[in-house]
Amino acid sequence: MTRPPVRTAPTGAVYFSLLGPLTARLDGHELPLGPRKQRLVLATLLSRPNTPVPVEVLTDAVWPDDPPRTARKNLQVYVSAARTLLGPAGHEGRDRVVHGCGGYLLRIAEGELDTLRFGSLARAGRAAAGRGDLAGAARLLREALDLWEGPPLNDLRDSAGVAEEAGRLEARCLTVYEDWAETEIELGRPAVAVDGLRDLVERHPLRERLRAAWMNSLHQSGRQAEALAVYDDYRQLMARELGLEPSPAMAALYRSMLGRGREARRPAPAREAVSPAAPPACTAAFTGRPGELRELLEVLGCGEERVVVVSGPAGAGKSALALRAAHLLADRFPDGRVRVRMRREDGTARSRAKILAELGRLCGVAGNAASPGNAASPGNTDSPGNTASPQGGAGGDRAATAALADAWQEWQARHRALVVLDDVPDEASVRGLLSRSGKCSVLITARGQLAGLAPVHRIALPALADGEALELLGKLIGAGRLRADPGAALRIVRACGGLPLAVEVSGMRLAVLRHLPLAEYADRLDDPSAALDELVAGDVSVRHRIASGWQDLADGDRWVLGRLAGLAEGGGFTLDRATEALGCGERAAIRAVESLIDAGAVTSPAGEVTAHAALYEVPRLLGLYAHEREGV
Image 1 (cartoon, one colour):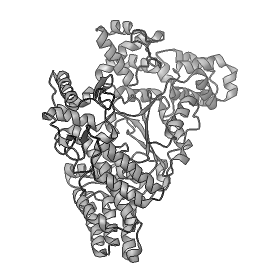
Image 2 (cartoon, rainbow, N blue to C red):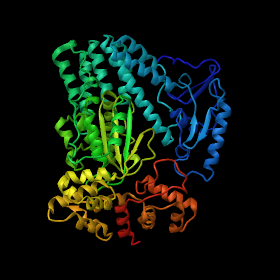
Image 3 (cartoon, rainbow, N blue to C red):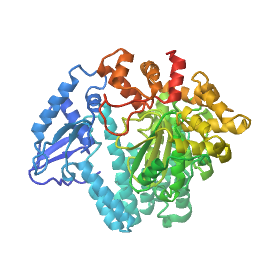
Image 4 (tube, helix red, strand yellow):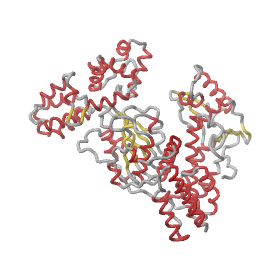
Protein backbone atom coordinates (compact mmCIF):
# COMPACT_ATOMS: atom_id res chain seq x y z
CA MET A 1 0.00 0.00 0.00
CA THR A 2 2.84 2.40 0.80
CA ARG A 3 6.54 2.89 0.43
CA PRO A 4 8.67 2.83 3.60
CA PRO A 5 7.59 5.79 5.72
CA VAL A 6 9.71 8.91 5.89
CA ARG A 7 10.71 9.67 9.48
CA THR A 8 11.02 13.35 10.21
CA ALA A 9 12.15 13.58 13.84
CA PRO A 10 15.50 15.35 14.33
CA THR A 11 18.46 13.53 15.83
CA GLY A 12 17.95 12.90 19.53
CA ALA A 13 14.17 13.30 19.37
CA VAL A 14 11.60 10.58 19.92
CA TYR A 15 9.39 9.79 16.93
CA PHE A 16 5.95 8.27 17.65
CA SER A 17 3.82 6.37 15.17
CA LEU A 18 0.11 5.60 15.41
CA LEU A 19 -0.56 4.90 11.72
CA GLY A 20 0.14 1.22 12.18
CA PRO A 21 1.18 -0.43 15.46
CA LEU A 22 2.07 1.94 18.29
CA THR A 23 5.82 2.57 18.16
CA ALA A 24 8.38 5.05 19.45
CA ARG A 25 11.84 5.40 17.94
CA LEU A 26 14.89 7.28 19.11
CA ASP A 27 17.64 7.81 16.52
CA GLY A 28 16.28 4.89 14.51
CA HIS A 29 16.07 2.48 17.44
CA GLU A 30 12.67 1.31 18.68
CA LEU A 31 11.96 2.07 22.32
CA PRO A 32 10.24 -0.38 24.68
CA LEU A 33 6.86 1.09 25.67
CA GLY A 34 6.18 -1.07 28.70
CA PRO A 35 3.22 -3.29 29.57
CA ARG A 36 -0.06 -3.20 27.68
CA LYS A 37 -1.92 -0.88 30.07
CA GLN A 38 0.90 1.65 29.89
CA ARG A 39 0.79 1.48 26.07
CA LEU A 40 -2.98 2.06 26.15
CA VAL A 41 -2.44 5.21 28.22
CA LEU A 42 0.27 6.42 25.81
CA ALA A 43 -1.86 5.64 22.74
CA THR A 44 -4.80 7.58 24.17
CA LEU A 45 -2.63 10.61 24.96
CA LEU A 46 -1.01 10.51 21.51
CA SER A 47 -4.42 10.27 19.85
CA ARG A 48 -5.18 13.71 21.32
CA PRO A 49 -1.80 15.43 21.06
CA ASN A 50 -1.24 18.68 22.95
CA THR A 51 -4.79 18.45 24.32
CA PRO A 52 -5.78 17.65 27.92
CA VAL A 53 -7.22 14.15 28.17
CA PRO A 54 -9.60 13.67 31.12
CA VAL A 55 -8.69 10.99 33.64
CA GLU A 56 -12.08 9.35 32.97
CA VAL A 57 -11.19 8.87 29.28
CA LEU A 58 -7.87 7.23 30.19
CA THR A 59 -9.63 5.03 32.74
CA ASP A 60 -12.20 3.86 30.19
CA ALA A 61 -9.43 3.06 27.70
CA VAL A 62 -7.52 0.90 30.18
CA TRP A 63 -10.39 -0.58 32.23
CA PRO A 64 -13.55 -0.35 30.07
CA ASP A 65 -15.72 -2.58 32.26
CA ASP A 66 -14.74 -2.50 35.92
CA PRO A 67 -11.88 -0.15 36.89
CA PRO A 68 -10.18 -1.03 40.17
CA ARG A 69 -10.32 1.28 43.17
CA THR A 70 -6.66 2.07 42.55
CA ALA A 71 -7.26 3.17 38.93
CA ARG A 72 -6.12 6.76 39.48
CA LYS A 73 -2.99 5.69 41.31
CA ASN A 74 -2.21 3.15 38.61
CA LEU A 75 -2.61 5.83 35.93
CA GLN A 76 -0.15 8.02 37.80
CA VAL A 77 2.35 5.14 37.76
CA TYR A 78 1.91 4.63 33.99
CA VAL A 79 2.29 8.35 33.30
CA SER A 80 5.38 8.56 35.51
CA ALA A 81 6.94 5.66 33.62
CA ALA A 82 6.13 7.39 30.32
CA ARG A 83 7.83 10.58 31.52
CA THR A 84 10.97 8.66 32.40
CA LEU A 85 10.96 6.77 29.11
CA LEU A 86 10.29 9.72 26.83
CA GLY A 87 12.33 12.44 28.47
CA PRO A 88 11.73 16.20 28.20
CA ALA A 89 9.90 17.96 25.37
CA GLY A 90 11.81 20.37 23.12
CA HIS A 91 15.00 22.26 23.80
CA GLU A 92 13.55 23.98 26.88
CA GLY A 93 13.56 20.72 28.83
CA ARG A 94 9.86 20.95 29.74
CA ASP A 95 8.03 17.91 31.04
CA ARG A 96 6.71 15.76 28.22
CA VAL A 97 3.51 14.87 30.14
CA VAL A 98 1.82 17.45 32.37
CA HIS A 99 -1.27 17.31 34.54
CA GLY A 100 -3.84 20.08 34.87
CA CYS A 101 -7.49 20.61 35.66
CA GLY A 102 -8.49 19.19 32.27
CA GLY A 103 -6.48 15.97 32.65
CA TYR A 104 -3.13 14.77 31.32
CA LEU A 105 -1.52 16.52 28.34
CA LEU A 106 1.28 15.07 26.20
CA ARG A 107 3.45 17.75 24.60
CA ILE A 108 4.58 16.80 21.13
CA ALA A 109 5.81 18.60 18.02
CA GLU A 110 4.72 17.94 14.45
CA GLY A 111 8.03 16.29 13.57
CA GLU A 112 7.66 13.87 16.50
CA LEU A 113 4.27 12.30 15.67
CA ASP A 114 3.19 10.75 12.38
CA THR A 115 -0.47 11.81 12.69
CA LEU A 116 0.49 15.49 13.10
CA ARG A 117 2.83 15.27 10.13
CA PHE A 118 0.15 13.42 8.16
CA GLY A 119 -2.43 16.15 8.83
CA SER A 120 -0.01 18.93 7.89
CA LEU A 121 0.89 17.28 4.57
CA ALA A 122 -2.76 16.55 3.78
CA ARG A 123 -3.76 20.17 4.37
CA ALA A 124 -0.89 21.39 2.22
CA GLY A 125 -1.89 18.98 -0.54
CA ARG A 126 -5.50 20.13 -0.54
CA ALA A 127 -4.41 23.75 -0.56
CA ALA A 128 -2.21 23.04 -3.59
CA ALA A 129 -5.15 21.39 -5.35
CA GLY A 130 -7.28 24.43 -4.56
CA ARG A 131 -4.67 26.62 -6.30
CA GLY A 132 -4.72 24.37 -9.35
CA ASP A 133 -1.27 22.85 -8.65
CA LEU A 134 -2.31 19.23 -9.17
CA ALA A 135 1.24 17.89 -9.48
CA GLY A 136 2.21 19.51 -6.18
CA ALA A 137 -0.97 18.25 -4.57
CA ALA A 138 -0.32 14.67 -5.69
CA ARG A 139 3.24 14.82 -4.33
CA LEU A 140 2.20 16.16 -0.92
CA LEU A 141 -0.73 13.77 -0.55
CA ARG A 142 1.52 10.84 -1.50
CA GLU A 143 4.06 11.96 1.07
CA ALA A 144 1.31 11.91 3.70
CA LEU A 145 0.22 8.43 2.64
CA ASP A 146 3.78 7.16 2.92
CA LEU A 147 3.35 7.53 6.70
CA TRP A 148 0.41 5.09 6.70
CA GLU A 149 1.76 1.64 7.51
CA GLY A 150 -1.50 -0.25 8.08
CA PRO A 151 -4.60 -0.17 10.30
CA PRO A 152 -3.83 2.48 12.95
CA LEU A 153 -3.06 1.16 16.44
CA ASN A 154 -3.81 -2.35 15.22
CA ASP A 155 -2.09 -3.90 18.25
CA LEU A 156 -4.39 -2.18 20.78
CA ARG A 157 -7.82 -2.27 19.17
CA ASP A 158 -9.25 -4.65 21.77
CA SER A 159 -9.71 -1.50 23.90
CA ALA A 160 -12.97 0.16 22.83
CA GLY A 161 -11.64 3.65 23.54
CA VAL A 162 -8.48 3.12 21.50
CA ALA A 163 -10.46 1.38 18.75
CA GLU A 164 -12.68 4.45 18.41
CA GLU A 165 -9.66 6.71 18.03
CA ALA A 166 -8.11 4.25 15.58
CA GLY A 167 -11.27 4.26 13.48
CA ARG A 168 -11.12 8.04 13.22
CA LEU A 169 -7.49 7.91 12.14
CA GLU A 170 -8.23 5.29 9.50
CA ALA A 171 -11.11 7.37 8.13
CA ARG A 172 -8.72 10.31 7.74
CA CYS A 173 -6.22 8.12 5.90
CA LEU A 174 -8.89 6.80 3.55
CA THR A 175 -10.06 10.32 2.72
CA VAL A 176 -6.52 11.40 1.88
CA TYR A 177 -6.03 8.30 -0.26
CA GLU A 178 -9.19 9.19 -2.17
CA ASP A 179 -7.93 12.77 -2.64
CA TRP A 180 -4.63 11.47 -3.95
CA ALA A 181 -6.18 8.92 -6.32
CA GLU A 182 -8.58 11.48 -7.81
CA THR A 183 -5.70 13.92 -8.29
CA GLU A 184 -3.62 11.30 -10.11
CA ILE A 185 -6.60 10.52 -12.35
CA GLU A 186 -7.00 14.21 -13.21
CA LEU A 187 -3.28 14.36 -14.02
CA GLY A 188 -3.77 11.51 -16.52
CA ARG A 189 -1.86 8.96 -14.40
CA PRO A 190 -4.66 6.57 -13.39
CA ALA A 191 -2.59 3.38 -13.47
CA VAL A 192 -0.56 4.34 -10.38
CA ALA A 193 -3.69 4.21 -8.21
CA VAL A 194 -5.40 1.05 -9.49
CA ASP A 195 -3.85 -1.61 -7.26
CA GLY A 196 -4.02 0.38 -4.03
CA LEU A 197 -7.65 1.25 -4.67
CA ARG A 198 -8.54 -2.38 -5.28
CA ASP A 199 -6.99 -3.42 -1.96
CA LEU A 200 -8.80 -0.67 -0.04
CA VAL A 201 -12.16 -1.41 -1.68
CA GLU A 202 -11.82 -5.04 -0.56
CA ARG A 203 -11.37 -3.81 3.02
CA HIS A 204 -14.06 -1.09 2.79
CA PRO A 205 -16.56 -2.41 0.24
CA LEU A 206 -19.34 0.10 1.03
CA ARG A 207 -17.16 3.22 0.80
CA GLU A 208 -18.53 4.75 -2.39
CA ARG A 209 -15.85 7.33 -3.03
CA LEU A 210 -13.13 4.66 -3.02
CA ARG A 211 -15.11 2.53 -5.43
CA ALA A 212 -15.78 5.48 -7.75
CA ALA A 213 -12.06 6.29 -7.87
CA TRP A 214 -11.29 2.62 -8.63
CA MET A 215 -13.85 2.63 -11.43
CA ASN A 216 -12.40 5.82 -12.86
CA SER A 217 -8.80 4.61 -12.65
CA LEU A 218 -9.69 1.36 -14.42
CA HIS A 219 -11.69 3.21 -17.07
CA GLN A 220 -8.96 5.76 -17.77
CA SER A 221 -6.44 2.92 -18.00
CA GLY A 222 -8.48 1.37 -20.84
CA ARG A 223 -10.00 -1.40 -18.72
CA GLN A 224 -13.64 -0.48 -19.30
CA ALA A 225 -15.13 -3.93 -18.77
CA GLU A 226 -13.48 -4.19 -15.35
CA ALA A 227 -14.70 -0.68 -14.44
CA LEU A 228 -18.30 -1.57 -15.31
CA ALA A 229 -18.00 -4.81 -13.34
CA VAL A 230 -16.91 -2.80 -10.26
CA TYR A 231 -20.14 -0.81 -10.47
CA ASP A 232 -22.28 -3.92 -10.95
CA ASP A 233 -20.71 -5.59 -7.91
CA TYR A 234 -21.35 -2.45 -5.87
CA ARG A 235 -24.98 -2.21 -6.99
CA GLN A 236 -25.63 -5.81 -5.94
CA LEU A 237 -23.82 -5.31 -2.61
CA MET A 238 -25.87 -2.19 -1.80
CA ALA A 239 -29.13 -3.96 -2.62
CA ARG A 240 -28.20 -7.04 -0.60
CA GLU A 241 -26.73 -5.33 2.48
CA LEU A 242 -28.67 -2.07 2.70
CA GLY A 243 -31.66 -2.32 0.43
CA LEU A 244 -30.42 0.78 -1.44
CA GLU A 245 -29.36 1.78 -4.94
CA PRO A 246 -26.02 3.50 -5.63
CA SER A 247 -26.14 7.28 -5.32
CA PRO A 248 -27.21 9.40 -8.30
CA ALA A 249 -23.61 10.60 -8.72
CA MET A 250 -22.31 7.03 -8.86
CA ALA A 251 -25.01 6.04 -11.35
CA ALA A 252 -24.15 9.07 -13.50
CA LEU A 253 -20.48 8.01 -13.53
CA TYR A 254 -21.53 4.54 -14.69
CA ARG A 255 -23.73 5.96 -17.47
CA SER A 256 -20.94 8.24 -18.65
CA MET A 257 -18.63 5.23 -18.97
CA LEU A 258 -21.25 3.37 -20.96
CA GLY A 259 -22.00 6.22 -23.33
CA ARG A 260 -18.84 8.21 -23.86
CA GLY A 261 -15.91 5.82 -23.77
CA ARG A 262 -12.61 6.99 -22.30
CA GLU A 263 -13.43 10.69 -22.64
CA ALA A 264 -15.31 10.66 -19.33
CA ARG A 265 -12.51 11.58 -16.99
CA ARG A 266 -13.91 13.82 -14.28
CA PRO A 267 -17.35 12.75 -13.09
CA ALA A 268 -16.03 11.37 -9.80
CA PRO A 269 -18.87 11.76 -7.30
CA ALA A 270 -16.52 13.02 -4.62
CA ARG A 271 -16.13 16.33 -6.44
CA GLU A 272 -19.85 17.02 -6.90
CA ALA A 273 -21.62 19.56 -4.72
CA VAL A 274 -25.23 19.38 -3.72
CA SER A 275 -27.68 22.19 -4.29
CA PRO A 276 -27.62 24.55 -1.31
CA ALA A 277 -30.25 23.57 1.20
CA ALA A 278 -31.84 25.90 3.72
CA PRO A 279 -33.11 25.16 7.22
CA PRO A 280 -36.69 25.94 8.23
CA ALA A 281 -37.73 29.56 8.22
CA CYS A 282 -36.99 31.70 11.26
CA THR A 283 -39.81 32.66 13.54
CA ALA A 284 -41.08 36.16 12.85
CA ALA A 285 -41.09 36.89 16.57
CA PHE A 286 -37.36 36.32 16.97
CA THR A 287 -35.84 39.17 18.94
CA GLY A 288 -33.08 39.90 21.41
CA ARG A 289 -29.87 37.90 21.85
CA PRO A 290 -27.72 40.44 19.94
CA GLY A 291 -24.53 39.49 21.74
CA GLU A 292 -25.04 35.75 21.35
CA LEU A 293 -26.04 36.15 17.69
CA ARG A 294 -22.98 38.27 16.98
CA GLU A 295 -20.75 35.68 18.64
CA LEU A 296 -22.32 32.88 16.62
CA LEU A 297 -21.82 34.73 13.34
CA GLU A 298 -18.20 35.52 14.17
CA VAL A 299 -17.31 31.95 15.16
CA LEU A 300 -19.14 30.17 12.35
CA GLY A 301 -18.30 32.73 9.69
CA CYS A 302 -14.53 32.68 10.16
CA GLY A 303 -14.03 29.90 7.61
CA GLU A 304 -12.38 27.35 9.93
CA GLU A 305 -13.69 23.99 11.05
CA ARG A 306 -15.99 24.68 14.01
CA VAL A 307 -18.36 22.97 16.39
CA VAL A 308 -20.54 25.31 18.44
CA VAL A 309 -22.81 24.24 21.31
CA VAL A 310 -25.67 26.59 22.21
CA SER A 311 -27.09 25.48 25.56
CA GLY A 312 -29.97 26.57 27.75
CA PRO A 313 -33.11 25.24 29.43
CA ALA A 314 -36.16 24.15 27.46
CA GLY A 315 -37.81 27.20 25.93
CA ALA A 316 -34.70 29.40 26.07
CA GLY A 317 -34.81 30.11 22.33
CA LYS A 318 -31.86 27.96 21.27
CA SER A 319 -33.47 26.73 18.05
CA ALA A 320 -34.65 30.21 17.05
CA LEU A 321 -31.15 31.61 17.57
CA ALA A 322 -29.54 28.75 15.63
CA LEU A 323 -31.91 29.16 12.68
CA ARG A 324 -31.45 32.93 12.65
CA ALA A 325 -27.68 32.47 12.46
CA ALA A 326 -28.02 29.81 9.75
CA HIS A 327 -30.04 32.16 7.54
CA LEU A 328 -27.58 35.01 7.98
CA LEU A 329 -24.64 32.73 7.09
CA ALA A 330 -26.01 31.58 3.74
CA ASP A 331 -23.11 33.03 1.73
CA ARG A 332 -20.48 31.35 3.96
CA PHE A 333 -21.75 27.83 3.32
CA PRO A 334 -22.17 27.30 -0.45
CA ASP A 335 -23.04 23.60 -0.07
CA GLY A 336 -26.05 24.26 2.13
CA ARG A 337 -27.44 24.67 5.62
CA VAL A 338 -29.27 21.66 6.99
CA ARG A 339 -31.20 21.21 10.21
CA VAL A 340 -32.08 17.87 11.80
CA ARG A 341 -34.12 17.42 14.98
CA MET A 342 -32.43 14.99 17.36
CA ARG A 343 -35.59 14.09 19.31
CA ARG A 344 -39.04 12.79 18.48
CA GLU A 345 -42.13 14.83 19.22
CA ASP A 346 -42.46 13.16 22.64
CA GLY A 347 -38.97 14.34 23.60
CA THR A 348 -37.24 10.95 23.39
CA ALA A 349 -34.00 10.60 21.48
CA ARG A 350 -34.09 9.49 17.86
CA SER A 351 -31.87 6.60 16.82
CA ARG A 352 -28.57 7.27 15.07
CA ALA A 353 -29.73 5.25 12.06
CA LYS A 354 -32.80 7.49 11.63
CA ILE A 355 -30.74 10.65 11.93
CA LEU A 356 -28.11 9.44 9.46
CA ALA A 357 -30.83 8.39 7.03
CA GLU A 358 -32.39 11.87 7.20
CA LEU A 359 -29.03 13.56 6.71
CA GLY A 360 -28.52 11.27 3.74
CA ARG A 361 -31.80 12.34 2.18
CA LEU A 362 -31.20 16.03 2.80
CA CYS A 363 -27.67 16.03 1.38
CA GLY A 364 -27.91 13.36 -1.32
CA VAL A 365 -25.79 10.86 0.62
CA ALA A 366 -25.98 7.09 0.19
CA GLY A 367 -28.32 7.18 -2.76
CA ASN A 368 -31.00 9.46 -1.30
CA ALA A 369 -31.10 12.68 -3.30
CA ALA A 370 -32.64 15.67 -1.60
CA SER A 371 -33.98 18.89 -2.98
CA PRO A 372 -33.63 22.19 -1.16
CA GLY A 373 -37.32 22.05 -0.45
CA ASN A 374 -36.98 18.83 1.50
CA ALA A 375 -34.46 20.43 3.82
CA ALA A 376 -36.90 23.17 4.65
CA SER A 377 -39.11 20.93 6.73
CA PRO A 378 -37.64 17.53 7.53
CA GLY A 379 -40.47 16.63 9.88
CA ASN A 380 -40.61 13.46 11.88
CA THR A 381 -38.79 10.76 9.92
CA ASP A 382 -38.91 8.02 12.52
CA SER A 383 -41.58 5.94 10.82
CA PRO A 384 -40.34 2.72 9.19
CA GLY A 385 -41.29 3.86 5.73
CA ASN A 386 -39.10 6.93 5.84
CA THR A 387 -35.68 5.33 5.87
CA ALA A 388 -33.75 2.40 4.53
CA SER A 389 -34.67 -1.04 5.80
CA PRO A 390 -31.40 -2.91 6.28
CA GLN A 391 -31.54 -6.63 5.82
CA GLY A 392 -30.07 -9.33 7.96
CA GLY A 393 -31.24 -8.60 11.53
CA ALA A 394 -29.08 -6.88 14.11
CA GLY A 395 -25.88 -7.46 12.13
CA GLY A 396 -27.47 -5.94 9.05
CA ASP A 397 -28.69 -2.98 11.08
CA ARG A 398 -25.19 -2.31 12.38
CA ALA A 399 -23.70 -2.67 8.91
CA ALA A 400 -26.29 -0.32 7.47
CA THR A 401 -25.70 2.30 10.15
CA ALA A 402 -21.92 2.02 9.71
CA ALA A 403 -22.28 2.48 5.97
CA LEU A 404 -24.48 5.53 6.44
CA ALA A 405 -21.99 6.97 8.93
CA ASP A 406 -19.10 6.44 6.49
CA ALA A 407 -21.09 8.07 3.70
CA TRP A 408 -21.93 11.04 5.92
CA GLN A 409 -18.30 11.54 6.94
CA GLU A 410 -17.27 11.31 3.31
CA TRP A 411 -19.83 13.95 2.32
CA GLN A 412 -18.65 16.32 5.05
CA ALA A 413 -15.04 15.87 3.98
CA ARG A 414 -15.93 17.11 0.47
CA HIS A 415 -18.33 19.95 1.19
CA ARG A 416 -18.66 23.20 3.06
CA ALA A 417 -22.03 23.20 4.77
CA LEU A 418 -23.57 24.20 8.08
CA VAL A 419 -25.29 21.36 9.90
CA VAL A 420 -27.69 22.26 12.71
CA LEU A 421 -28.24 19.37 15.13
CA ASP A 422 -31.22 20.62 17.08
CA ASP A 423 -32.14 19.60 20.64
CA VAL A 424 -29.34 17.11 21.24
CA PRO A 425 -30.04 14.86 24.26
CA ASP A 426 -26.44 13.91 25.13
CA GLU A 427 -22.85 13.72 23.87
CA ALA A 428 -23.14 10.16 22.54
CA SER A 429 -25.87 11.26 20.14
CA VAL A 430 -23.54 13.51 18.15
CA ARG A 431 -20.03 12.09 18.43
CA GLY A 432 -20.33 10.02 15.25
CA LEU A 433 -21.97 12.88 13.34
CA LEU A 434 -19.31 15.58 13.79
CA SER A 435 -17.02 16.21 10.84
CA ARG A 436 -13.58 14.63 11.13
CA SER A 437 -12.16 16.62 8.22
CA GLY A 438 -13.20 19.19 5.65
CA LYS A 439 -14.92 22.56 5.85
CA CYS A 440 -18.29 21.69 7.38
CA SER A 441 -19.37 23.39 10.60
CA VAL A 442 -21.81 21.96 13.12
CA LEU A 443 -24.14 24.02 15.30
CA ILE A 444 -25.54 22.03 18.22
CA THR A 445 -28.43 23.10 20.44
CA ALA A 446 -28.89 21.27 23.73
CA ARG A 447 -30.52 21.74 27.13
CA GLY A 448 -27.43 20.50 28.94
CA GLN A 449 -23.90 21.78 28.51
CA LEU A 450 -22.58 18.56 26.84
CA ALA A 451 -19.38 18.90 28.86
CA GLY A 452 -17.99 15.68 27.35
CA LEU A 453 -17.60 17.25 23.90
CA ALA A 454 -14.26 18.90 23.16
CA PRO A 455 -12.97 21.01 21.58
CA VAL A 456 -16.09 23.08 20.98
CA HIS A 457 -17.11 26.72 21.27
CA ARG A 458 -19.82 27.14 23.91
CA ILE A 459 -22.57 29.73 24.16
CA ALA A 460 -24.95 29.51 27.14
CA LEU A 461 -28.24 31.38 26.79
CA PRO A 462 -29.29 33.30 29.92
CA ALA A 463 -32.78 34.60 30.59
CA LEU A 464 -33.84 37.50 28.39
CA ALA A 465 -33.12 40.94 29.79
CA ASP A 466 -36.23 42.95 30.66
CA GLY A 467 -35.90 45.13 27.56
CA GLU A 468 -35.54 42.16 25.21
CA ALA A 469 -38.47 40.34 26.81
CA LEU A 470 -40.69 43.44 26.53
CA GLU A 471 -39.72 43.85 22.87
CA LEU A 472 -40.75 40.24 22.19
CA LEU A 473 -44.04 40.69 24.04
CA GLY A 474 -44.75 43.92 22.16
CA LYS A 475 -44.32 42.22 18.78
CA LEU A 476 -47.13 39.85 19.70
CA ILE A 477 -49.64 42.09 21.48
CA GLY A 478 -48.87 45.40 19.79
CA ALA A 479 -46.74 48.33 20.91
CA GLY A 480 -49.79 50.42 21.81
CA ARG A 481 -51.14 47.87 24.28
CA LEU A 482 -47.68 47.52 25.79
CA ARG A 483 -47.34 51.29 26.29
CA ALA A 484 -50.81 51.48 27.89
CA ASP A 485 -49.60 49.61 31.00
CA PRO A 486 -45.80 49.20 30.96
CA GLY A 487 -45.69 48.27 34.63
CA ALA A 488 -48.02 45.30 34.14
CA ALA A 489 -46.10 44.26 31.02
CA LEU A 490 -42.87 44.24 33.04
CA ARG A 491 -44.54 42.09 35.73
CA ILE A 492 -45.60 39.61 33.02
CA VAL A 493 -42.12 39.11 31.53
CA ARG A 494 -40.54 38.85 34.98
CA ALA A 495 -43.15 36.30 36.07
CA CYS A 496 -42.10 34.36 32.93
CA GLY A 497 -38.56 34.34 34.30
CA GLY A 498 -37.30 35.91 31.07
CA LEU A 499 -37.88 32.55 29.34
CA PRO A 500 -38.52 33.34 25.64
CA LEU A 501 -41.05 30.54 25.19
CA ALA A 502 -43.07 31.69 28.19
CA VAL A 503 -43.02 35.32 27.02
CA GLU A 504 -44.07 34.21 23.54
CA VAL A 505 -46.92 32.06 24.89
CA SER A 506 -48.08 34.98 27.05
CA GLY A 507 -48.10 37.21 23.99
CA MET A 508 -50.03 34.68 21.89
CA ARG A 509 -52.58 34.23 24.68
CA LEU A 510 -53.05 37.98 25.17
CA ALA A 511 -53.29 38.52 21.42
CA VAL A 512 -56.40 36.30 21.44
CA LEU A 513 -57.82 37.57 24.75
CA ARG A 514 -57.95 41.20 23.69
CA HIS A 515 -60.33 42.05 26.53
CA LEU A 516 -57.97 40.84 29.27
CA PRO A 517 -56.13 43.70 31.05
CA LEU A 518 -52.37 43.16 31.30
CA ALA A 519 -52.52 43.78 35.06
CA GLU A 520 -55.05 40.98 35.57
CA TYR A 521 -52.95 38.55 33.55
CA ALA A 522 -49.86 39.60 35.51
CA ASP A 523 -51.72 38.79 38.74
CA ARG A 524 -52.46 35.30 37.44
CA LEU A 525 -48.80 34.69 36.56
CA ASP A 526 -47.67 35.97 39.95
CA ASP A 527 -49.68 33.20 41.63
CA PRO A 528 -47.26 30.20 41.91
CA SER A 529 -50.14 27.71 41.91
CA ALA A 530 -51.64 29.06 38.66
CA ALA A 531 -48.72 30.35 36.57
CA LEU A 532 -48.06 27.19 34.54
CA ASP A 533 -51.79 26.74 33.87
CA GLU A 534 -51.87 30.24 32.35
CA LEU A 535 -48.90 29.63 30.04
CA VAL A 536 -50.83 27.72 27.39
CA ALA A 537 -51.78 28.98 23.92
CA GLY A 538 -53.59 26.45 21.74
CA ASP A 539 -51.38 23.37 21.54
CA VAL A 540 -48.28 25.21 22.82
CA SER A 541 -47.72 24.53 26.52
CA VAL A 542 -44.82 25.74 28.63
CA ARG A 543 -45.52 23.00 31.18
CA HIS A 544 -45.20 20.35 28.46
CA ARG A 545 -41.82 21.72 27.35
CA ILE A 546 -40.50 21.95 30.90
CA ALA A 547 -41.73 18.40 31.57
CA SER A 548 -39.59 17.18 28.68
CA GLY A 549 -36.53 18.78 30.29
CA TRP A 550 -37.51 17.29 33.65
CA GLN A 551 -37.50 13.82 32.13
CA ASP A 552 -33.91 14.35 30.98
CA LEU A 553 -32.75 14.61 34.59
CA ALA A 554 -31.61 11.60 36.58
CA ASP A 555 -33.84 10.61 39.50
CA GLY A 556 -31.33 11.94 42.03
CA ASP A 557 -31.05 15.26 40.21
CA ARG A 558 -34.84 15.66 40.24
CA TRP A 559 -34.92 15.22 43.99
CA VAL A 560 -32.09 17.71 44.46
CA LEU A 561 -33.79 20.22 42.15
CA GLY A 562 -37.00 19.91 44.13
CA ARG A 563 -35.15 20.73 47.34
CA LEU A 564 -33.24 23.65 45.81
CA ALA A 565 -36.27 25.15 44.06
CA GLY A 566 -37.65 26.25 47.42
CA LEU A 567 -34.41 28.09 48.20
CA ALA A 568 -34.44 29.94 44.90
CA GLU A 569 -37.73 31.77 45.47
CA GLY A 570 -35.97 34.64 47.18
CA GLY A 571 -33.68 35.30 44.22
CA GLY A 572 -31.09 32.57 44.55
CA PHE A 573 -29.23 30.37 47.01
CA THR A 574 -25.69 29.89 48.25
CA LEU A 575 -23.72 26.69 48.68
CA ASP A 576 -24.18 26.85 52.45
CA ARG A 577 -27.96 26.96 52.10
CA ALA A 578 -27.85 24.11 49.57
CA THR A 579 -25.78 21.98 51.95
CA GLU A 580 -28.32 22.56 54.70
CA ALA A 581 -31.35 21.88 52.46
CA LEU A 582 -29.88 18.67 51.05
CA GLY A 583 -28.73 17.39 54.42
CA CYS A 584 -25.31 16.35 53.11
CA GLY A 585 -21.69 17.36 53.29
CA GLU A 586 -20.18 20.27 51.44
CA ARG A 587 -18.47 18.17 48.77
CA ALA A 588 -21.66 16.25 48.03
CA ALA A 589 -23.60 19.51 47.79
CA ILE A 590 -21.06 20.97 45.35
CA ARG A 591 -21.31 17.88 43.15
CA ALA A 592 -25.11 17.95 43.26
CA VAL A 593 -25.34 21.63 42.31
CA GLU A 594 -22.73 21.31 39.56
CA SER A 595 -24.55 18.30 38.12
CA LEU A 596 -27.65 20.48 37.74
CA ILE A 597 -25.57 23.27 36.19
CA ASP A 598 -24.25 20.77 33.64
CA ALA A 599 -27.83 19.68 32.90
CA GLY A 600 -28.96 23.29 32.41
CA ALA A 601 -31.35 23.23 35.39
CA VAL A 602 -29.39 25.64 37.62
CA THR A 603 -27.62 28.82 36.54
CA SER A 604 -24.40 30.15 38.01
CA PRO A 605 -22.44 33.42 37.71
CA ALA A 606 -20.81 34.07 34.34
CA GLY A 607 -17.51 35.21 35.87
CA GLU A 608 -15.09 33.28 38.05
CA VAL A 609 -16.07 33.13 41.71
CA THR A 610 -15.52 30.61 44.48
CA ALA A 611 -18.21 28.00 45.10
CA HIS A 612 -19.02 29.56 48.51
CA ALA A 613 -19.36 33.10 47.13
CA ALA A 614 -21.49 32.14 44.11
CA LEU A 615 -25.21 32.81 44.02
CA TYR A 616 -27.02 30.01 42.18
CA GLU A 617 -30.50 30.25 40.69
CA VAL A 618 -33.24 27.89 39.53
CA PRO A 619 -35.32 29.37 36.68
CA ARG A 620 -38.69 30.39 38.15
CA LEU A 621 -40.94 28.24 35.98
CA LEU A 622 -38.72 25.18 36.34
CA GLY A 623 -38.83 25.71 40.09
CA LEU A 624 -42.63 25.82 40.02
CA TYR A 625 -42.74 22.59 38.05
CA ALA A 626 -40.31 20.95 40.48
CA HIS A 627 -42.65 21.93 43.34
CA GLU A 628 -45.53 20.27 41.51
CA ARG A 629 -43.65 17.03 40.93
CA GLU A 630 -41.77 16.69 44.18
CA GLY A 631 -44.33 18.23 46.55
CA VAL A 632 -41.68 20.42 48.19
